[in-house]
Image 1 (cartoon, rainbow, N blue to C red):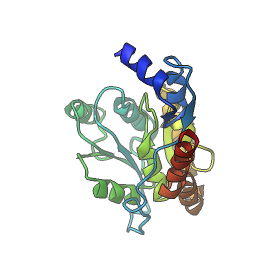
Image 2 (image 1 turned 180 degrees about the vertical axis):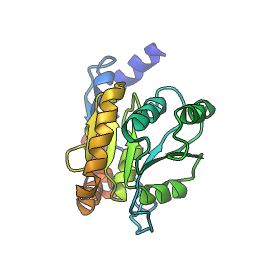
Image 3 (image 1 turned 120 degrees about the vertical axis):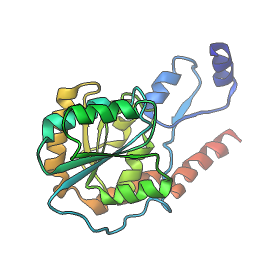
Image 4 (image 1 turned 135 degrees about the vertical axis):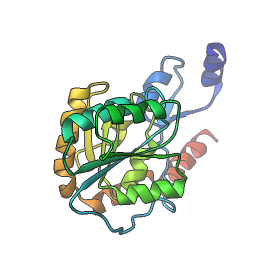
Length: 231
């Protein structure tokens, strides 16, 4: 496909990338100008809701296609090393070819009472799980952006991710922790630090920053500015 990529990228009036990592990749194919405009979050679906929780336990939520590259195997191992036998649970949403393998891992690691698989979820069900959890975690190895991080933040949840290309644009000190990619030891230590910090994150600040940076009005305004420049 390369010749079509070169032709398209070089003939267009403007290129828009959803993140700085993707912008860096695109520079290998063109000298054309590239503007970064992030994806916008659906703030009608991802709304903070007060839900009854078991305050004695910390509930972590992760969501992804259960396929190679999403880091679920690393997350499960790091979770076991960090929290086996403790009052911390991990709920995993999503389906894919690795689901049975991951379930077998959980059984072999003897953490079935702490790790639960939900299968494929609708957008509304994802929003519910985001609201039920205390923090969102995803150890994906590569992301051009990472919409699920922002969806979790939209309901006020802190996030933990890896340096996978997309997360670096999203995760800051005020909203979570980012750790080295493909590094189970770093992920384990990051999870421990994350769980310790969860009570101290400012929910209202996290939500406000999402509206400021990823809300419909903000993103559309940026795109319209590009349209005006090239027209």
